[in-house]
Length: 319
Image (cartoon, rainbow, N blue to C red; front, side, top):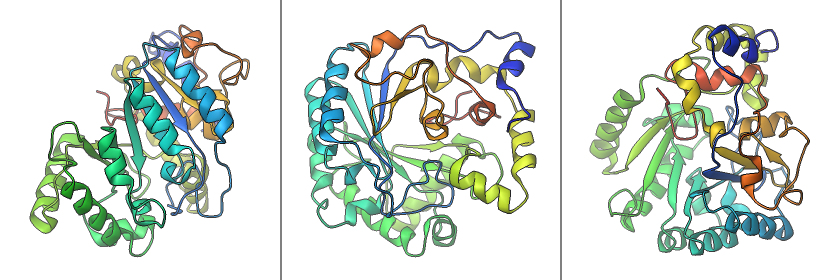
């Protein structure tokens, strides 16, 4: 991606440099520990990783959340965030502070020992679950995420439906689609209709929305592209598909990403690439996340992944 300049593309399109507006979402990456090792993972997470947010950092994040009244959403991710020992603290205290809490869940983690009571805990705190399910067929899911993952995912989705997720008001269950290869996602609305039909007909499963997210050419997916000789062509695909209509909706315009060790980033992708907020501040260097408003956003070639086609964010398409 180094040959494609995002800053130059913005200038060519007559757009100003990216700057953050009001901070409305705090995305907290609690670490890289995960029960899966998916081939598209931009975090390079897995069972052998040890990076995990400690209690002191989690409590500082919660303090800053309370000092940032404009931040309505707390988006907890990983790894498998549920495996972090401070996950329940972050959820409960954020909910108590009247924040909308999001759990980015790989589904199968809810079958792991020690966390099987989590669905009820999440429901009690009105946590929105955004769950990864890259396809509605067994072969495609297992190819991307490992043998047996699809059947376990269906088991957990049925469990979540059983306590009201995707059915009852206030218990939101959204799914995430990632392409299997070096292509852009299909139109989100049409694919959601396919998911709704197939999951209902085949398994009796209900959910609220489907988000389509473009695979970022970084970390494990970048390694795959390099091995298969597709890195340059995929990077060009993203560059050529640049859509200026997506820029004002980019998630970095209203989001701050906090790493497991307390550093601050403009997004989770920048975090994984080690591109910090200018000045490399930590949660100990600010008194509120509002201190990061109206600041320039660090960009690089991977940003074309968020602006290609209909755009991509943690909440799906943008345009």
